[in-house]
Image (cartoon, rainbow, N blue to C red; front, side):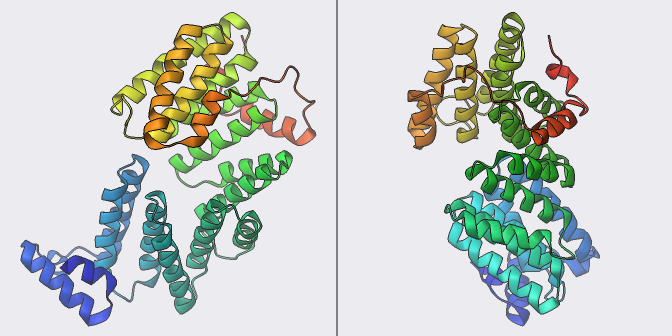
Length: 361
């Protein structure tokens, strides 16, 4: 394909291949249209980000590939940003080898242009890939380098804190994990990234026995305009947190409401065994089923669990299948919260929107 050849080449070869592709498709070239490249890069990357947010990953990847082909060699910073975003989408599509190659190209562009922003993006990418393989010592080292890198982008710093949160939680250092989670949330640049970080922070608070604060965190996240990808884990979290934070009748009312909303959202994504976001759908249905069981909604709980099991079996989500077969036991009594946990919990409880579901009663 001419476009693919353009993406993989540089200089005059790329320009010739791209010109041939545009001529074949009857498209006016961008210089003729009078549209500046920086504007095109900004708009196209934002559109690709929205596609990624709503799980149109292949469309996002195609958009970024085309953008890589048309950007001039002199736009080193912009090309690096596009490559880093393309690498992230490739990783989400399961193409980890391709993602590593792209991050290596970002790293090379960073060195060529002495651009710390691109260096930070490459380090975050390598850290995420190390985390994926379970190499937490490596991921911790890479993410820490981002925090001390002068000139790293704010979203890279936020992602580095998120990666360090994951590493700390894996080591069961929950105080440190919660601190990194708060830093990831407070330093996030975009609304979608901030919502993601807030949901992760709320999940940590729930894990350490702070259900009231967790409920406030999930509620604050849901008060924003969330995509289904972000809304599903927030809904599952609300259901579980309500069980620990509310009186029985109040908890039952919240869980029933959230269960209905979750089922409706999964149905809107296609329902059945292959909704548009199968992992997020199965995970949320699993959490809802556990919450329904805790508030004595046994029949509804079994129905949600059965739906989650069907999706998990179809897509081989072994971790979810195992959780459904071996539901986690609710601790009879939580350990006393640490000073760090209480401090972060108070900050979360004060967030805008937390009162919508998070208020006691």
